[in-house]
Length: 212
Image (cartoon, rainbow, N blue to C red; front, side):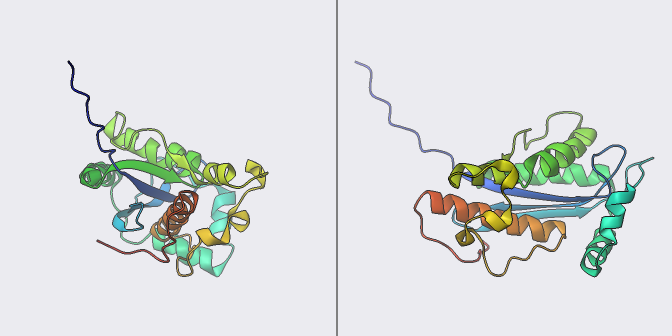
């Protein structure tokens, strides 16, 4: 008689919230100025972060409309200046990012999160990783889109009409500002996602986040 196998414990997910800043609408012709990744557990522990300001791509240009946006307010100008501090070589930065993502496996199975995922991860960070690694990176090629998650949770909503102003107020923490600095915005986005998942699953709300 075959013994009934005991169910295996499910590997926990960790959520890698990605935000990028760029000087144009797509990589190659334009450059990613900076990126930030914040790794969260479902218990809202900020497990680790990774961020880099990058050198511009060889031969790339800057898009006039995007650069006009960067210069449009004092906050935007200050955020742009932050992207040009301590810029790092692209190759070394992407190799370090790939190694960092592999180091998180001890916490659980990484799930990339973007808002929108198709832009921050699919268009930019994934492109840069492949540009250097010449293969599928450890993070894979799929990502959870925060707005898509919100549409699935909020009745009678439509994707194009959704935005942060239409999300459940309970998904937001008081002290996680949106600054257009990549790591700041990645942390804010990660807290929104964890709050939303915990709300969906009937888990107690956690205000703010902790570190290990």
